[in-house]
Length: 168
Image 1: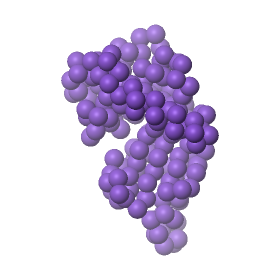
Image 2 (image 1 turned 45 degrees about the vertical axis):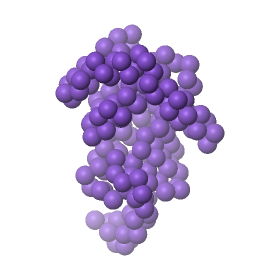
Image 3 (image 1 turned 135 degrees about the vertical axis):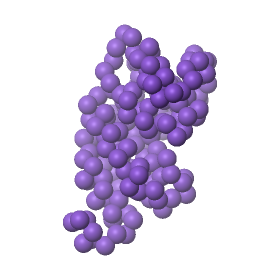
Image 4 (image 1 turned 90 degrees about the vertical axis):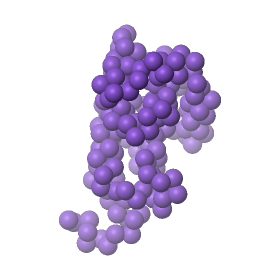
């Protein structure tokens, strides 16, 4: 979300299937209303061989392209453990957000954004990111289970907020 030409850009490289990733997505979503002057993006980190991760990331890209305003709500609700019925669960989440599921199914089946998914996966690998989450905030790198407080401290520095404001 946010303008792509923002002074401060947050890029999250992560999977969507484990506890630190779930927590991070929930925390990042809290920033949306508070910081309207930054750009936040999400990029996949996974080997490309896990069918659950493949399905998840294709679905993420389809939702991102077809329902950009609902993307972060979808991402927050769709994270979870690998399940045999995961595909049905992902469509249920989309439906609960009033998304038209049929175009999403077609997008996933046709692998409409395969090039984009592969590009972002390879880009993460190129950056040396083999597992997530990793958060880049305008050049600063945060690894692992990052707290909202830590993210906000970096944002304050990047947005040039006087240090006294950090202590709210």
